[in-house]
Image (cartoon, rainbow, N blue to C red; front, side):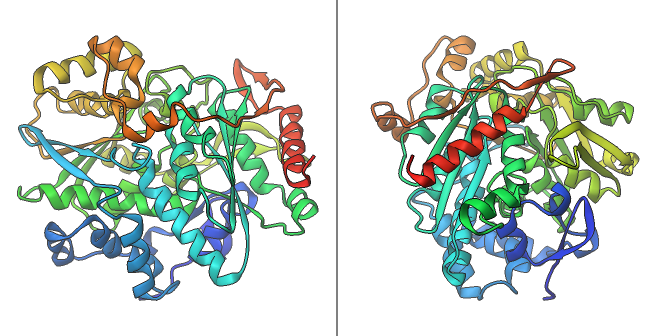
Length: 486
């Protein structure tokens, strides 16, 4: 197989191998690494059919080896994936619910979130490349809920990696917070006075701040990312839909994927899977009251607004990072306007070249689920089918129902992305019951926390929170103090 090269969505003249893109995290000009549609490898029907009898790790090898075969020996990749997706640690199940509708439970890993899948691949691959080259990296990650815990768990204790996790002071549950703050060692959990978009802006600015990394570490490439902006987080998310289809392919028809979406990593992974040849007839991109994307599909106008609070807390994202990849795949270009001197974002989400909107609308439907409907859906699904959903899974389920107009008779798989036990208040509000506490979370409830803080206030622009220079300067001071021991 030929070596695949990746480019920056903001600079197509850049070319990087998977390892180079993986280690850098952010591409040049603050772009995201992407590959051309023509370079996306295809998997033939016989290989897809053979997945019915395979484990998740074996399916992951079939999906990911075309991207990685030139980067590491096959036996090393197989061992890495078997370790990452050990079924004793991270079991995956596709459950029939009604008609031809299934739920894929991506909620049984160490932190009870679908983020465990990509994070475990990322951590082991990062450790592999660093060990091979004798380097070290600092992983900067923003989280709106589940990403932080999953990445922190995956990176915890790795010899050549430190992890800074930036999470919003608001809109994150205690259980989500404790999955980051109780680990310690090489995991530094940082509470930020702001929303997810502010946290994301901190991580992106650190990744682009080569002078700061050079001055502090003597290495301008020391910072990398584990958010879904990282290629190493994106590609393993193309495995989910292949696994789902392998368990429902008894029907001779393509699959509808119901994908609750925040930063669009799982949705973009599903888009890539379809480009690889998986028979997916439609991707239902379920969002909460942050409706920028469905509004764009409807009107052709993309306008970033202040983020709206929601029970699906990990999906409170006004300007999804992976939208840049989706727009690129469909022939367009979207970027954040920045001050050339400081790198500070002055306008989010400017489209200077429109994608093929007709093709986008044909392939993807995006449906918004309002806050009250989260709870109504959780209650209805529990009463009718005996299934306990979390708020994010409720968005996936309800958006599929809306698309199918209540007739769940087309082959469909809804992604359930977090254990309901991570959201006891929401389950109590919806159903009047308390969900079981997942075992690892129960252990963390009594552990001491270590919290670092960025207390400076964000700026406000058109009602939205925007990273301030004071916040970024405080972040840099904090990082310097940790490494200087002061």
